[in-house]
Amino acid sequence: MRFILNRSIIVSFITYAGVIIGYLNLLWLFPRVMSLEEIGLFRTLQDIALLFVPFAQLGAGQGLLRYFPYGANRGEQKQLVTLALLWSVGSFLLFLLLFWLLQDWIIQFFQDKAATVNAYLPVVLLLTFILNFQGILEPLSRSLLKFRFVAFSREILLRLLTSALILLYFLS
Image: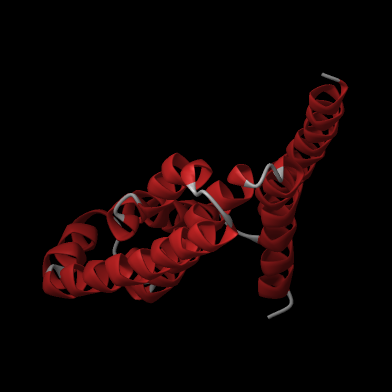
């Protein structure tokens, strides 16, 4: 029980640190560096990528989370991780094909509502690719009981990288 208590306390501190970093990003850094239109575009690109991830992943992360504990030995678990990664790559390639086939419709959809998004669709695909693999590595870390790493990467690392990218944007 002490093990669970220690882990939960550490994860709670990591989460609170992430909230503070997110607060500083959202209420201090973003308004000082970007205009309202740029903040809106930034959030829209993130949201579109998050919307695309389930289609690009086709359940690979959830399958890994569901069946990883049933691996009888390390060899079977490694095979399952390899299969999940290959499935993720294959499903992302299938998603790219579908995206390419529907590209005219997607461009037309955003042309009416937010034309600037069309210029950044490759960025959306890159974000989708990154989030696709995060969706594999995060359940793997959970299955290996590495909750601190999952919390750190999601709450702190992601927000610090966002801060760094915004500062790089500011510095041109």
